[in-house]
Length: 445
Image (cartoon, rainbow, N blue to C red; front, side, top):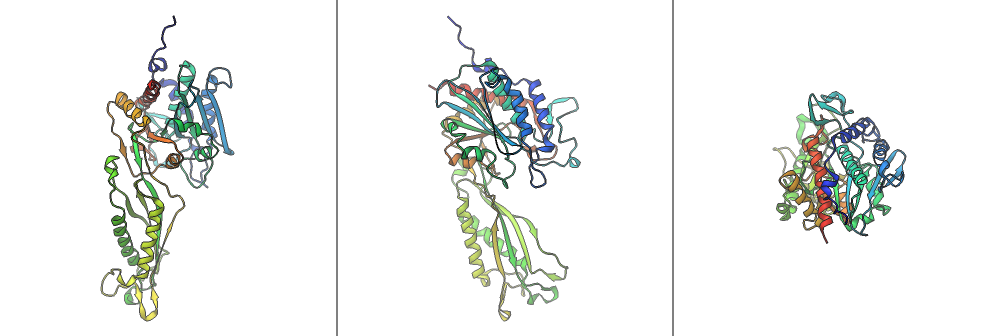
């Protein structure tokens, strides 16, 4: 009689440092050409995709060396996605790891303490892996590649198919249809809907169960330019903008207060609207400006609709324009209407096209429960959290019927930051969490 197969965690083992670091070094070495900020920086994710293929093809059906099904999908030259499947034995049973993106945000070497475009270590500390993309998200690319390679080497008998999707174009929304959005549109990820989808692009080793929507806005005020010594003959666009924005913020917080579900999801903040940038055409200190623009964003918890908020803000501005006489002014001669000249100040609000919706993960999902149990088992504690920071693409996946859960094993404090790094021990725990998730799902009858 054949002896029973060992538990998956024993068969697969832990994250092998040497091949992980060797692969990560190759990926970080490409980052100068992976920066995503067009038109100045257009990434070539093919460079990373090729390293992933080089690691996995030896245990794939393409070479006859293993069971992995490996597919490269490109929608534009030089920018690929990679789908890797370890086939299970039961149709419809799937667990997937998605979101490991192969582009990075830009880095200025002059502002870093070390070279952002090569993998380095902190003196004798081999625990800290330094370089652009170590946390976001090439560290995860290397991590999941090692998981899939190990499955291909060990060939455990699994009921579930384990699928990894490495994607292009996560860091910029000005170009669409070439990353996970293209894969979904073409139906290439449809089979992932029958099991939990783990989006591996957050940080700090805990389940991220909620993210915020984001609405970029620009409020332009038009008044009347005039000499500052004759303020009674001017409409001060800066004052108009400040007073109008205060009124808009007051109405926003009345209409979109803290939602009762934010406590359940442990959001650090409720929805917010705030200015982050001023601009005006220029002029002397003795000129009252005739126009200016204040810009900012709304961070919206996922329990409110971004489209409804946009509609409400337009209503606020329209109402303020119609009732400028009621808007509080500043001082005895500050005014936003000049009846003798038949002049009125004017407000105009516009919104950028890259509005994002937040997401609230399904807390009753089998995938969420498996992630929490695995995190407690491996990390030692589980503390799900939510932030009104925004992750692109995942709400769209949820709306398409995917059971999206999110996690990550980099460091939030180095996310998009100068001197980015991750810790090998965190990535090693992430590897064990993934194996635990697969094992738990396998145990479900």
